Length: 206
Image (cartoon, rainbow, N blue to C red):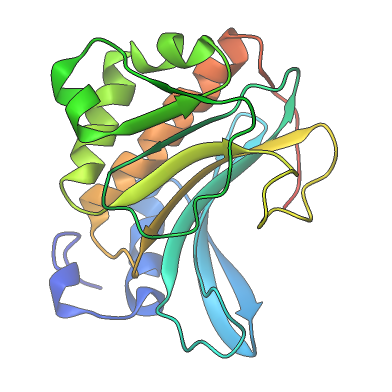
């Protein structure tokens, strides 16, 4: 056991994440990815499962790992969005029918590129907790944050009528405060998506 702010002395999430689970109200999930045993952190919020995991873009692991957080939900509409910084180098893909947007917050608009196909993105990003969390995470890592459907080039297995709230960043995220903020962001956004008539509070498995 080590202090929650002591992750700088560790390099492997399998050594760090298990010690976070109690503080995050999460559980450790054992996973097998490309012949490698690993772990994920999963938190239940209402009927939704929010999962943090490490993955690779290729089977041979020649590319560096990336960290992703995701939450699947039954959707009532086609609302999607993508938020990322100018320097993001990961897989972007297309957001069908999306337009470049601003929200009228200079600090936020200068920091992020915002694309969406629906005015609900304005309702989402006027929430102060959501803006604060995204800015806080961006001070630590470069990321993309989005809703994806099964039209995405890397979401072939997503069932019809199911979307996924998704955040991705390069490398392996070990910092407790960053991970805590990510979980808090997902909880806030999922609750808002339900209030906006997009998400259904229903159990969807990964």
